[in-house]
Structures are given as structure tokens and as C-alpha cells.
Image (cartoon, rainbow, N blue to C red):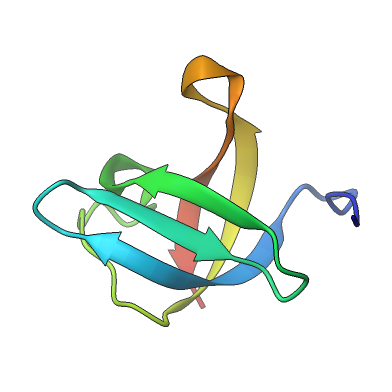
Length: 74
């Protein structure tokens, strides 16, 4: 499994987003998947399209699981 780049920024694509719940999943080209909450979308819209290409950071989230934050659409 590859590590996070020195800059900490990963690139990926939104694989799933449940707008009513505000929960989604983003995946990287190498197969890693990270969950995110709508509050992690950087522009504050609280919604994002499936297949949107994004840059994001990964942090330890609830229960110690790694999650995507600061999602920015490319």
C-alpha cells in the first residue's frame, strides 16, 4: 500500500454520496477508500457529485478510522 504524499494531499474520485445523510466515500487510483461527511467539502456547499475529481487530506476521524477532509473539486 502506498503512503500519503509528503504534501499530504491525495487525489481521487467521489465513489458514493448519500445527500440526505451527508455521507460519502472517495477513492484513490490505487484502490484506497476514505469516508467523508458533507461538512468536509471545502466550498461549504454540503453536496458533491458522484465521479467528481477531488483533492483531499486524510485525518484520523471517529473511532480512529481515517477519513477524507477538505475535499476540493478539481
